[in-house]
Image (tube, rainbow, N blue to C red):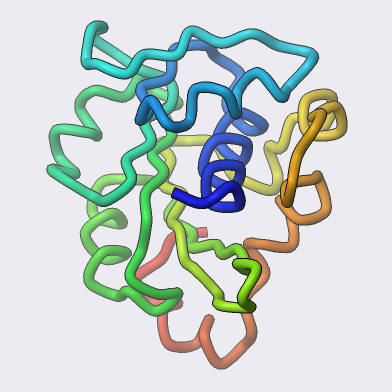
Length: 165
């Protein structure tokens, strides 16, 4: 997993979720330490009954993930593209908010992620006293967080019926 992807998965989640219990791939552990205003309980194995944030490198059993999240839980995973209608439609059956977002790799390639939440909105509910105080990042900052959810109109038109804003 690249530095950019790690930051955009971990820091987007951590800068929108107020609670502490995160189930994430071990490769993301250090990313949460970049937020200097908060410490998190980061789990790499399914040890708790409920989590506030679950991040998966690739989507698995969405229903199981949904059940493992608390009432304000967030799920972040990789999408095939910004127009991954199948994934977005599946998530939209369960989650109140489903929004694709993206990051740009060093070679200029655009990669896609998806933010699904039971209640929290990734831009309206950004926690600025976290996102503004992230140290030693390669890619992430508050403006990138916000901008990564802005899609060109032609892409938005292709998915507007299968996402939830």
